[in-house]
Length: 458
Image (cartoon, rainbow, N blue to C red; front, side):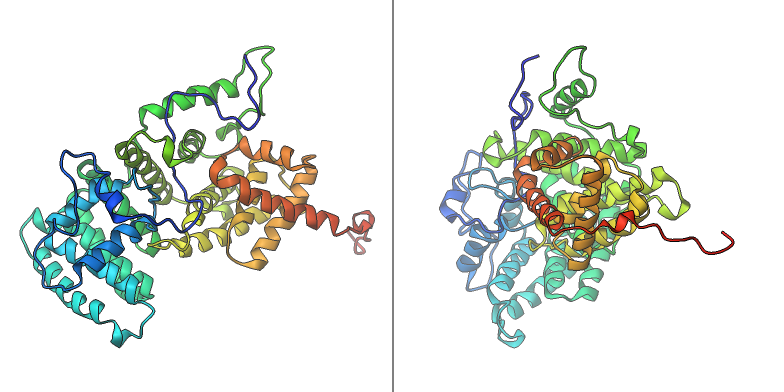
């Protein structure tokens, strides 16, 4: 077997796609977006839209297509690879309710810095949108729960969530959940329009306190063909032939480390996705981009739907599985904090839960494995809570020392055995490691050599 450089990923046939952003800002010109649709005719959002009395359509549509769509979870498109333009924008141009909600979203972005009474566009469009949506949901099936109707309600929920109106946002999302159940769950919507389904998934994630539709409770995530190509490479690294020298340590077997089967499958999905897909420019089409994002969202929905093992029951398997669940939430969603709909509440809760779950495993140098090392490092990358962050750094320093890890190269090789997305992970985990090094260099005292006397009678 030919050796590859340690930084080179396995050579497989599948393309690469951006899953997570490198920065929060990316602007482009609306004309470039008009030319990127793969259909036979050009798409012009300034002329192809329902009739409206709104006087600022050009300004609001320009804002939406030049700015807003580049900062919406879970999309981070390029001007030439944009599932929103390809699969969502046509709905905007044909549906009156969704069109006006889109204008309202743009108006909110433009006017959110103003006092509420001075947000004239928002006030004007809010009244129009409420009337249009109320009329729509009173229409007979299937119009009352069409893709366009669901997307319009989700847009209103996003605005209320971003405003901090949690009660109103919850009302809209609860209604949205009921509408999704009428459709047969998010999986049914993925069949008609995966991009709409992904958007709906994201608003459920952002609100964090409204459960997914029960229709999807037993849904099995469908793995695309590229997954199995990547899996063959992964399994060949797990079980190399005799005398074969690996370029990097082999990936760990999640189940062998105690992770329950259903969660192991989801972790494998994320590992294969992170290994296979890196940047947008490597994707051949917006269709491929959409398929990968849909696989990501379906996997994460399953992760958030499965029952959480109770660490208090004392089972190692339940404890390590719960920790993996919380860490996966941080690993994926922390990159999108600040994007809309903002998943910060879910991420900060996951960080707290990860710390609470890991504490028994790390107590008195309990369990030191590469998986625990990865869990601690992921916790350290979370952008919330200085006290929690310090705990993760301290525990990571001890665990790395116990495993004999003294350099960033050794640390990175260990993390790559679990789940590693080079594009997103290298910088942030390196920063965590630098903090570990600084903590070590801060000096330690030989307190570990002290022996305290036991109380009398013990």
